[in-house]
Structure formats: structure tokens, C-alpha cells
Image 1 (cartoon, rainbow, N blue to C red):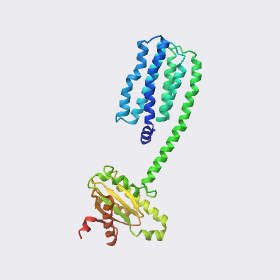
Image 2: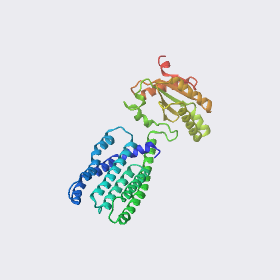
Image 3: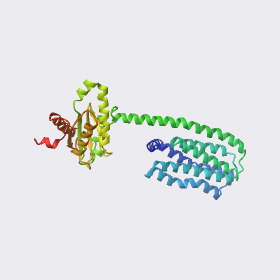
Image 4: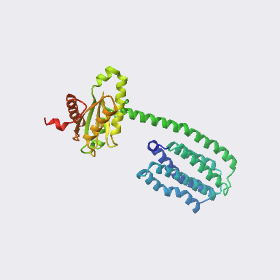
Length: 341
């Protein structure tokens, strides 16, 4: 997937399924040692080495997969590597054993593992892995005399095709669920009209050590459209909604990724302006852009964030806003300048 966020979330969702599948697959080599002994009549160093290699590599896989900070794509690639390592060592084991009457059953299990990895990753990865699997198996027939190879292929091929076909609706279902979750998460904390944060988003910003508000010296601004009731009364609520959308677009264009804005309610908006910017200049820029690009004006109240309770600081900014409203509108007023009067 080109969407990294989608892939990372899918990997996190299926992480344990993928990890335990690969781990159990590798550890299953211990059980094969018993059947190897019966078939071969003992143990050879070559067979033991083939069976033990995936188990020896397994601790490294566990450390990199479970305890490292490497990206999800690397961990996914690591799982496919472990799968193919076990498949290749199993093929070599068959060469030394000389008997291949259980090859079909063993390869069925391998295809189930590919199927699980395909659920956990992408269709593309699963198809590539299946092609590599079949390539290795068919190539091995050059030096291994498989018993009734045509019958083995006839039994395996429908399973391979079926598993790939089933992966398509499964991946499509997960993608739909992913899109629905994103929509729900967005609507939970965003205003549906302006696409800015809604007042519900306060819980994301007010708790300690969670967001931008934990940084010192940020500023709080609250702005309000002047005479908005008259705009609604004269031109209708549809036109009023368009004014709100236009205002939100201008706000977005004037803020950086370190700032954020939320619709406080009605025609009121709250801005949090990062400490590395001159908050008054940012607020004035928004006000001037509104005046230049729209038929309405706005008033703005501004105050520093104390780092304690956001709503109390919003109320201070609100006092500055209404001071601006009472003294001509279409201006930015700082709370500190009126609180001492």
C-alpha cells in the first residue's frame, strides 16, 4: 500500500497473529525430527542442520519483531524471510531424506502460512511470496525425485489459487473498516462543516503531556464574525455556512503545523498559536485576510496560555474579544492590555 498509515495500522492490528504464526511454524521443526528419524533410520548432520537453522534464527526474529523500533515494513519483510527460510531448509531436508510421500501435506501447511501473512500485509506481498514458493518447489524437482509430482501439483494448485482469491475480499473488508474508523475518529473531534477541530477535541489538548498545549508560551485567540446574525437574517443560513467555511479556509492558510484551530461554537473559533510565532501578528494577519477576501469582518481576543486550564484562558480571550466588539469591531485586542484597566 502506498498509504503508510494504512499499512502501519493494519500491521499493528494483525501483529500478534503474524508473529505467532511464524514462531509456531519455526518451532514445528522440532516435531519433524521424530518423523525424520523414522524415515532416515537415524539422524544425519545435514538433516539436523536443515531443521535447526530456522530455530537458531528464531531468537533474532523475536528480538527484531517484538522489541526493536524498526518500521512495520521491515518487520513484515522479516516475517516473509523467515517463512521462505523454513521452506528452503525443508526442501533441502527432503533431498537428504530421500522420501517425499508427505510433500503435498507439508506444502499445504506452507500455503496456509502464506495466506495468514497475506491477511497481515498486502495482496501484492502475498502473491510475490506465493510465486517464490512455487518457484522454489518446482526448481527443487530438478534434483529431488518427488513421488507422483503431477498428482502433488494437481492437489496443491487449487489450494494456492483459492487462498489468493479469498485474500482479495478479506483485504477489501479490512480496508473498508479502516476507512470507517478514520471517518468516525475524524467526526468525533472535528466540526463537520468547517473540517476544523470541534469543541470535543478539548480532551485531546487539555491533559498533561499529550499535545501542543504542554509547550510553554503558546497563545490562545478567540475570533468571532462581526454581525453574523444580520448576515444570516439577510442572506440565509446557507450563505452563513459558506461564510464559516471560507473563514475556516483562511484560518488554515495562516496557521502552521504547530498551531491548531477549533470551532468553539456558532461563529466563534479558538486558535492555539505556537510559541515560536508572534501571536498578535498571526491574529492580525488572519483578520486582514478576512477583510481583503470576504464581505464580512472579524474581531479577535488574544491571551497567553497559562499552562493550567484551557477553558479559563479562553474566557480571558473572550473578554478581550467582547472588548473589541464594544469598541468598533474588526480589530485584535490583547487581554493583558485591558486587564490592567
